[in-house]
Length: 222
Image 1 (cartoon, rainbow, N blue to C red):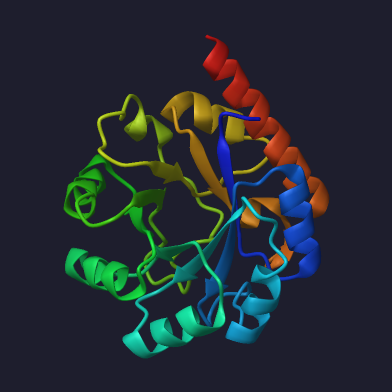
Image 2 (image 1 turned 120 degrees about the vertical axis):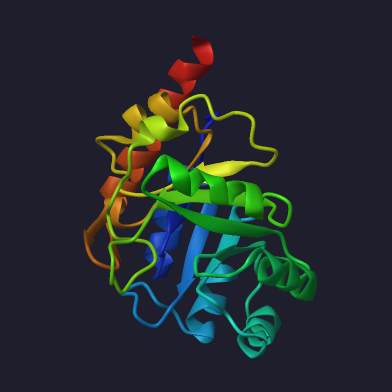
């Protein structure tokens, strides 16, 4: 088994689920954000979630969810984790964690070293962090934009008190470099394994997981 855990985010079909699971993904992400080409209804997400193999974590991507939606989500879709990708405050993260009883991963947008200071604010209330590229000014999507950031900002950042995941502009071609530069043990990909926005490519998923696995094994052996 690879020492790198991979999350395939934005799955939309049973074929997506099967391709990601068979390739060895540790997490599958379901997007609930109407502006995203990967957006799902609760009914669609439930049908996908029940097909996910045991041992693969089911994660919902949420953007500033209100309590009404959270309650409906928890009632309808079997999940293992919530990923908060909006402007949720640390206090709101703690509220959502308490209300749902699920572990929470908070996304942190990074463009400069100064953005890393936000990690100290969220570390006490989150179970994991998603370190992602900050979306472009005025952009419609909080993530899944295919943008990366300066990975050297994360070099030797092993002092964070909780697990973290790297996201932003990762592809089968650059994931090995990203792992080598950051030392991350968890990675997240969405647009980097698509043939078009919202359309996952099984071959790219397989190539991504293979590249990540080989890179992780190489790092572990050094």
